[in-house]
Length: 396
Ligand SMILES: Cc1ncc(COP(=O)(O)O)c(C=O)c1O
Image (cartoon, rainbow, N blue to C red; front, side, top):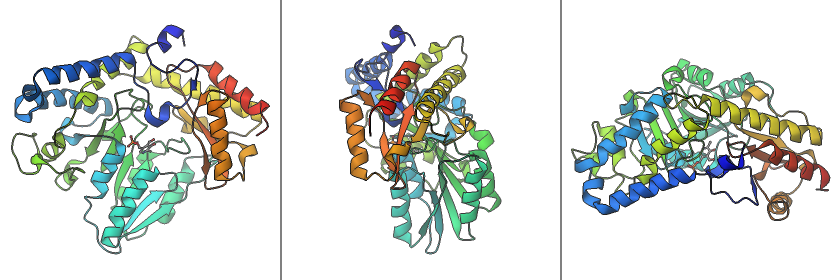
């Protein structure tokens, strides 16, 4: 990518930033839009922020755009701070009973799994973990692992659309079908998905879907959405219960009303999302209606090429097929096998301080030292080539 495109982001030029996946990175124009919204708010706080004045139409504009992008009905979409918030709201609202089972996977995001454990423990329910393999050769392995853990007591499943530690796309449509064939509700944690993958919730038909705006849509932190199927909307409470629980004028349905007002808040991160969508769509014109297909394909091709360079340099077999990758990829490094957690942390520290890379270095299943690369429009193949040569040259 050209330097001028890189200049759209504030990222320091002396660091190869290969970690868009963790917190995203927000372009300058989006930060400017966020500031503009804050300025407008502070010019007339009541007029701007009071739900009975002009807040709701502004939120609805963003809601409509998200709904269109993910192929869902706008009234089924609520705003949350982030995916962790979305998972908490859903799992802590479930009417669980002692003996019920909730299914998660060993590739799940720890914060969200913690929320599931909390909700289960309070009701005497149990959390069952499906063990997904990694390296992996075929997405059918995921379906088999999950199917093997279902019992007549399974009430609810949480799967990631794109797994955080292993960076693989799970076959969500098939897993939803499997769950529904057993009368089990299913939530998809799509923290990484919007902006990385095309989404069609009408086709996927999850019971619940949550995602972040601040990762691959490059929105300001912190903002995300929660989709809840119409049938369960009356049950789901936000993590903060506020006026909307029993007041009129906070939204068109009780669901909307509950989520529109988490107490006094800053809506600028939500409102600036439209600028982020315009910006991303404009990177690969001509595009229409928030069509990010070209950007997503370009990021996918870059991460695949970056992964290939590293795999070839270190002579590693591919740990997951390209078809299971979006724009992040995890690589287990043979030289880091059996290293202690402390040693793995020290390697990450060295890569940061000495070699000027920012990327996650971690242990999977307490023995597999891994790194994860991301590819966003500001990255270039040379960055992965430099990483490959550092990984190949240094004695780890
Ligand atoms: C699958 C998954 N879920 C949840 C999260 C948490 O995101 P947040 O901290 O924005 O809630 C992440 C973050 O990387 C993730 O990968």
